[in-house]
Amino acid sequence: MTGDLLIRGVRPYGEGEPVDVLVRDGVVAEIGTRLSATAEVLDASGLVLLPGFVDLHTHLREPGGEESETIESGSAAAALGGYTAVFAMPNTDPVGDSAVVVEHVWRRGAEIGLVDVHPVGAVTVGLGGERMAELASMASSRARVRMFSDDGRCVHDPMLMRRALEYATSLDAVIAQHAEDPRLTEGAQAHEGVVAARLGLAGWPATAEETVVARDCALARDAGARLHVCHVSSAHTVAVLRAAKAAGVRVTAEVTPHHLLLTDATLTAYDPVHKVNPPLRTADDAREMRNALAEGVIDVVATDHAPHAAQYKDTEWAAARPGMLGLQTALSVLVRACVEPGRLDWRGVARVMSQRPAEIGRLRDQGRPIAVGEPATFTVVDPDDMWTVRGAGLASRGTNTPYEGMRLPATVVATVLRGRVTAREGKVAA
Image 1 (spheres, one colour):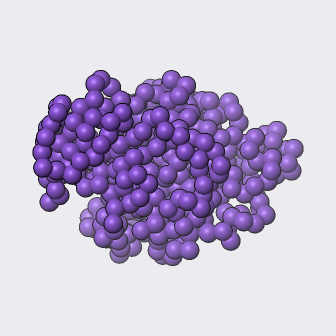
Image 2 (cartoon, one colour):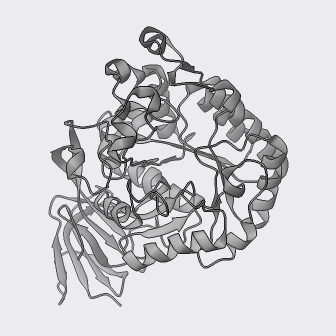
Image 3 (tube, one colour):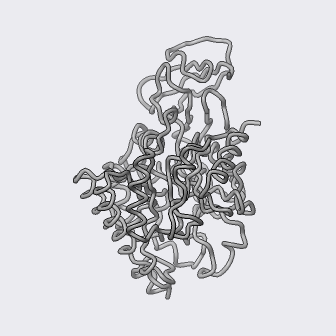
């Protein structure tokens, strides 16, 4: 049980007049004005209250990559970024392709207790793309895995992908595909276009993404299965998704914050901090990502938080590993890309960062409405504050942020997980 918490003077979803929210035993007990109680008080005057954020795509690196991130440091970054649940990708060492490994990740997340850590199980053994992993054993484990992905690698074999989709359906699970045809991206270093040609970098065609998405939508249609497309980056992929959804295919999709805001124009300095998979694409692609998110063709924002130790990033471009930090900057980037221009309001932010991710991940106690009787799992946001991003000041072990030195809008003032404050004013709970 948690103690009582009184959140005073906050505006749920940034709408209406300020109210007080009284939390008792982890549940919203009362919403009103001038409430009083013997409780811990969180002064939220002028602030916005949102459901806690849910990230469907996080790399916590543990086990095996602790020099870049741990479940503890990643959980801290998540809580400070307003997240109350994260889905941890399985490309660890050993790979998360068994009940033993996913239960370790789940258990370690629960011990730390800053966010709910939900392991994503691998689709294939060792991410090798040849033999399906034991999905049922991971689904029935204590981790109760409901999302499977070979993220970082595409499940390229169409027969294997078809079987995985069919099998996942019986588990009420979703297959999250890293859509990249490997034959089209051999040696690729940057988006295939004018910038890559000028810099002498091998091109990464958008076709490599859209063709896999088109194939998988057809497979999911025939299987009646749920398909989730990771980190959409191409405007052509959006067209495929729009058509598939109109045809009734059970497909959802995510976009990263960096694909909403950044473009391949940032590559001109050859700084590997901008190297990411899929690559940053054109301004037209980024604009279509923003439009598709507002329209609902792209369902959610997912960070693809990918911390790397300095030795993996501070090197020449071709040798650098792809990936960027995302957990502590995601909200601010979304505000800059979509809220400030009027594409999303705060209820829209809740939809793409909390409600829809929780639905896709089958989380019954996350992404819930702000109402009496609902779990008190919140993010408290200062919509008017500005902050300067410094990689060294973030909680992750890696410092590889593409926003270094940028002034960004909106800060997370507090994060509350089932009535317990996990982060407050830039610090995690003791």
